[in-house]
Image (cartoon, rainbow, N blue to C red; front, top):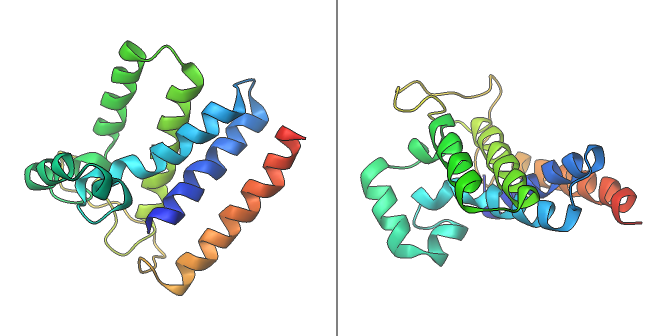
Length: 156
C-alpha cells in the first residue's frame, strides 16, 4: 500500500480506538498516522524513508523490505521502547495501533509480510491486491469515510 493509505489506515484505526476508550483523541490519532508509516522505514522510497534516508538505507540493507519492520517482533520491540522512554500512553497506543493497521494493509498485497520474522513465512490474505492499484484507491476511500464518520462523534 502507499503512504497515504497507511496514514489513513492508522488514522481510521485510532479513531475507532478513541471512540471506545478515554484516551485523548488528538495525540492518539496523530500518533496513529505516524505508526501507520513507521514499518516502511525499510523502504528508501517510502514516505518515512524519504524523511530519514540514512536510517532507511541502513534498515533496508540489514533486513530488506517487509521483513523485520513488518513483524510482531518489531511491534513488540517498539512497544517496549515506548513503554520505557515515552510517558504518553495515548501516543504509545496510537503508534502501535497505526503499526498494526500497516501490517493488515500490507498483508492484503500480493507480496504479503513476514509477520513471524525471523521465520521466513509470508503472511497474506487469501484475496490480495496490487500496491497503488484501483482497489487500493477504494480501500483508501472507505478508510477516509470511516475516519470522518467516527471522528465527528469524537470531536463534536
